[in-house]
Image (cartoon, rainbow, N blue to C red):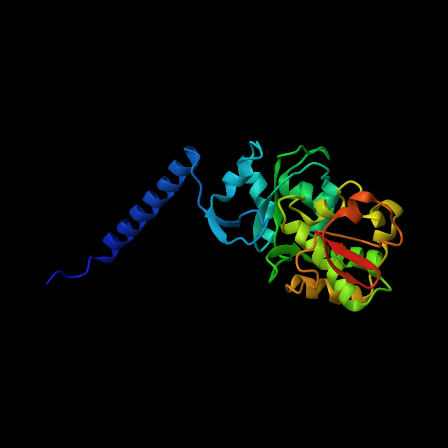
Length: 254
């Protein structure tokens, strides 16, 4: 039977192992290899947490000070990578994820407010939720959905308000339309409340409840992508669309 090593030899062994571990870490850093962290993929639709090199995501932005860029991220529970689209601004991206512009810039070590289409930004996903209809939205995006329902359908039957929410979600899920909620809402000439400013009104609780019901998967329109009030518009395009259903003053079409 082999007896235990003397105490002084055990100490030497411990020191040797520790030194080897430190040397290994230094070697990895010197060769640009970093420990791996869990970062969520972009949330355009259902997504899973995947193992991705955290600092690799930072490096994709072209930032040379990778280790410094990682520091602000530690205050967030999880991160995702958002790809800038046409029409985006730091203000809208920050608002979507519940940040100030300065917090977003600090997280990404940005020196100016200028961003470019295709640029990849780290954003927190603490407030992103998955909804049964098949989309992931932040709390702010759900509020924007309620704002549009309120602006377009206040005074309509409750089921008609759910229907308006469903049309917006159908567009978000359709390849014919932008793949972000803000992109759908702010698409050129898509919704009159954006043009007349009524979108910015505070929604009531009925509109918020209708938004959540539409997000739960209730679609009274059967998949409609458009709606309009036939008594208020003579637009030939809208009147030519195949009708799905009429609810209150709104006609829902494909």
